[in-house]
Length: 248
Image (cartoon, rainbow, N blue to C red; front, top):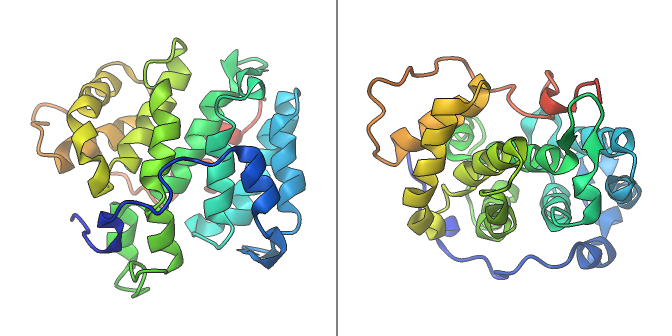
């Protein structure tokens, strides 16, 4: 199902503000999280720029609990996502995670993908009957969905990244964000990336996202095994923790 309400409009601000501006100009104390207001968020967000990957990954895990608990969108979710997207080009995003030798940028992108998925068409379709009004203009989910073109612009440069994990994480995030009608022109280009994920990825959840995107966009997916597992716990702030589990 393709929604066409307020999210068919371009977001009021098309360029992602610098992460420093998001941090300084957001009234965090006034924003709801899963556990009270967001007064602790500036400190947690700052830890994403620490040179220690253990500190960075722990901070992302905390953010998942604070603004993505039970796969929900909170008042603080949008500015946190904007901050995370804004630091993708920061030198701290190139910190390598021990044992995995993967840049932390891949984990940041996976976090964005998971958060975007919590407001995706699939999740909204499944929950709107129990929580009517999710797409009412100004509602939390609708407002977050309006940010998708802005977030996509931050993710897109990494679709051709030289590191396989970063590249795949960027593709998954982009496929989810590209549900926004304003990003329809990018879908043919993204379809080639989705095919590559289906052909080469060993991650079943990522392959599911690629398969579902191709199916939704009218591409032939016959001959590709469909995915039947329920996606409710997908992502780094799910019970499974995904890419945020040790070893760090």
